[in-house]
Image (cartoon, rainbow, N blue to C red; front, side, top):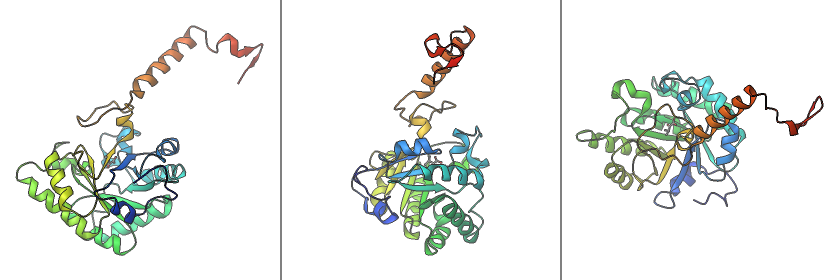
Length: 274
Ligand code: KIV
């Protein structure tokens, strides 16, 4: 799918039709300026619940609320014209019942303008996914390492190894059968990601999975080197903005302490030139 020639944001059917074609490009965004920067380059912009860890300093995504998602979703939607906006359903907002999921998905879409929601889970969430889709809510599924289940998964480990391989393939088929328009595969062996990509009729979007997936997603602040609390092995940093930002802050602090800021050439008598 070409990012530059698009006139409107892709719809779920456009994403589905990208299966097996040019890989889909996706990144997370949480703010208007970053959304504006990626709009021309991404097919899907994900307002991920990773916002809790990346911008709010939470230890996991479990503490992310509907209100946080709505606030960041609104900010991101102001920055997008061409890319499809997908928003994560936070932990506790959809697992209880399909009805609870619909109530919260409808609120997320109505209050942010998102074109679809993403939720974590395979076979266990298939009924909910079908329920949402029948009621007008497009769903992107997320299987493999599902960070909202970190306490039952026992850590941020590779998923789908050994006996768990068949279960993950079943998860992928279940969400595709339920009507999800795409599925995120997080932290699974490349051979398994490739097998799932061949087995399901919807695009697979990999994160720490395989270059053979139908698309890739990364957390923006990870790939920019802005989030440095930890780095997953699969993350490629395309920049080191965290180091640059810290160096700029240190340089500013040094100038202030040396009374060399504002620099003399910016000052005319009592008036500071802007
Ligand atoms: O919340 C998020 O950023 C995500 C991506 C890692 C896929 O779910």
